[in-house]
Picture 1 (cartoon, protein in one colour):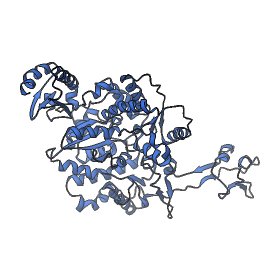
Picture 2 (cartoon, rainbow over the protein chains, first blue to last red):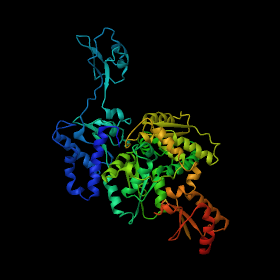
Picture 3 (cartoon, rainbow over the protein chains, first blue to last red):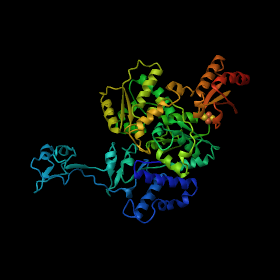
Length: 474
Length: 79
Ligand code: FES
């Protein structure tokens, strides 16, 4: 059975599935307003105060599933009425405070923000408090807690704020569209815009690939997804949807590894350019480091470029774990190669909208890339690939000293050091998601075993070296 | 002349790489680099008969071991 990590994903999936179903059946325009009734059944609320609110929120999700607010350039959007306006007071003294006489909290607070009431219970003067958290550390009863919104905790670039109604707001000039808040909000109040309707249109307009050939470029993290079916069945399913052929983005990763290794040996210092959220983060927060970002297009764009250059009349949809790719494909330098982007979540919705049962399908094959291209999906894989590419190109003399950063906090640390000139490494592998792409917000599931799945999939590659994998591309 | 080799997954697993390498070698050996344009494409919609190769519009079904013969009988005569 298919499974998602949370009920929020499940709800989002149902909306996407129904929107896709209506789009496939040419009745989206006239009957999308009926979709809330399909999803919220009966008159007993199961998620919110009443079914009317539940339906109103589903209606907002439908808008996002149909492309969202065209005036908002960001692909990550807030559903205002779905936001529960969670408390976000920062450090607060809870009822667990016993009113002890040691007053360690007072002692440790450099700002003098702790005061006591007539019961000797501690309080924090929010005008003085800077949320350093020292008081929480020293309290013998762990009575001081840090009350933050899950979205705020998830967002490591600090793009999450609050509007005048106390509901969440996103600062687009900071947001990198990594999707962490989308995945973490327990109420599903933040959602990535979907281009699923565009993809349905691309499938329909191709007229069974007669008008153009519709290619799916699939990210290597697919190996850790859809665990209820075999990978070969997933490929069959994608073709059954109406795609002409499925190509591994990992072959683009092989190509990138080769050119990136060369570029690094020439320039001496580089950051990777594969992860669009990382690249965006560098441009926004460390503009002085932007010149060190590799010139390579991402693996997605690289392989799509090859497809379009060699196959006239091709259109390409990228299917991956990533919400930030939905931003990347709209960039001027990528737009000519990628026609649309969907996530694995959305692929599941598409497949089910056509009532395709993957487990009953035969196994098709997917094999273009090498082991190294495939392991790009997990943290450390890109560095391993660049090391191999240096070797395969006879550039072993170059002293390769990479640092693999997964998660924005690790990236920030390395970038800060590098911008001050005291990073000992000469290559920053930057991935915005913890664990690498397998931790992406658009994944159906996020599990411990995912890394092993990627490695296993890598080892199954027909081609063992990067050179062999890319030798078919002239 | 344009020769296109299918490098889609199915053909790849049946030996596209060997076919491409062999063709490259034969083209070089026969000094035909500026006469023959060798390219790849992902899938020709004829997966069961891979490795598929086209010369213009004509489609041929190859194996790595029949590549030399294909080159001698089909490619050379079209030059
Ligand atoms: S993969 Fe070669 S024809 Fe389909």
